Image (cartoon, rainbow, N blue to C red; front, side, top):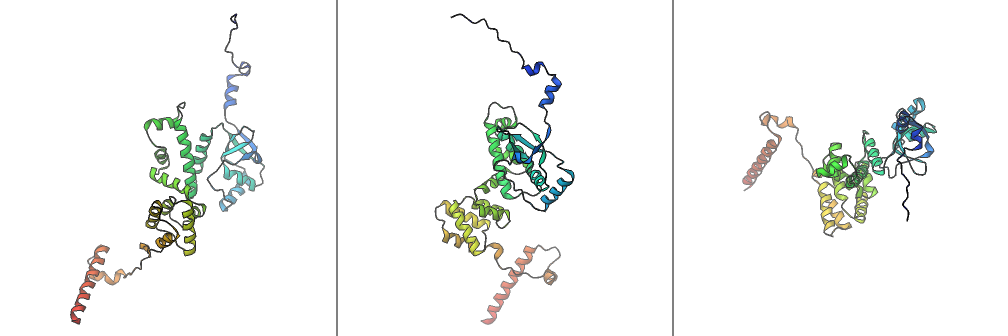
Length: 311
């Protein structure tokens, strides 16, 4: 078979032959474009709630007067539509203001890059619900872990992997939280919706909510029903006890009711004496615990004396 004498030349693309370096660089730069609101979809499983509250109404009024001052960040999907990465509140405010378009920066991002930017941009807000942190931390951790597994990257995630640090520890350093706190927030994603709502509303404290998350879903539902019927919530100690019973396979509705019926330390009746009534009996600066111990000893002596007089 005759060998081909065809010579292959590595020629630049035709566009490059008839364009300047300046125009090619300009084509690569990110630009702000007005995009129709109807063409922008929300980020999948966006963990942050966007509410039509007073702050949103104020933002809508500002958008109506001055427009959107900070462009949103979107990425283009294969079908030509756009996906919001950062700017969900601005989009809703624009809709409320009667706008048809919103200024956006279009950036080429992978799923994981988009997830990390979406989470980071929303964590700058002043008020963030426990559930929002929970799902946001989980999404970012999963994205960081996937990036860390790649061997063709020269970005920071590879450096984290080579240093042997866990993603939770890295995320904690970024946010000023311990890795244990990060893990506890992620545990909240295992709660059933009604109990997670109670955690958001402050009806169930954070640490008890974390312990409850270890219960199977059906036992969480039984706990929720009991909390509603008895109008009570578990303390940390009670939540830990329920978790232990569940792990031993001994948790049921009766056990849940029994544990919740236990007296909590802060439910014990307190007896208080105004400090000014007893100050004359103690030197200035006497610690409260020492005053309490002295009063108990005095009462014991008084009780003993009463018994001696009755004999």
